[in-house]
Image (cartoon, rainbow, N blue to C red; front, side, top):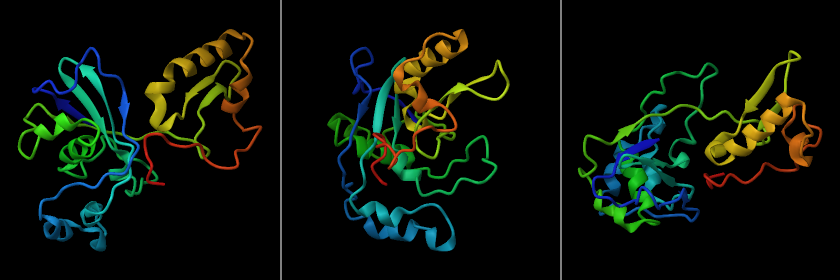
Length: 208
């Protein structure tokens, strides 16, 4: 994710909600398309697929205020193509220096004021960090007893952990207390008792 130091105050810290842009966007490269093709290293086994950035891009880019003038920006589509090794590398290696600028450009369709952070305007306070989403094959979380009698698991929420954390935590607490479980609890158990015909919609990535 990108941690934007919002020195221009584009995103109101106390009023802006978690915001997601679902429509496709076409980024304005102002005649730099040839350079993007040259930058692309996927033919040599690299991960910078910049030639594709000249095409319409899937939505799913999102942001939320993070306090102290900071804003979190993410666009999973930009790294969806990168293979995850069998033993994931941590800390997560930087794969693209342009990721902050791409996130800003993509989110400017939803918040035009972000366009004020043009090339060279992001400042030193803007940083990138990252890791891996834990996700199950069918996209549903795991919130259930697991393994030893007093062991429980709560995870596998993929891209919607921030949105689902409260409900998942409550369900995990009910399991721990041995309380009556809600009707949807079985959907979060493992192994699954009911198999989904298709994977649930990922609100934060429309590229697949």
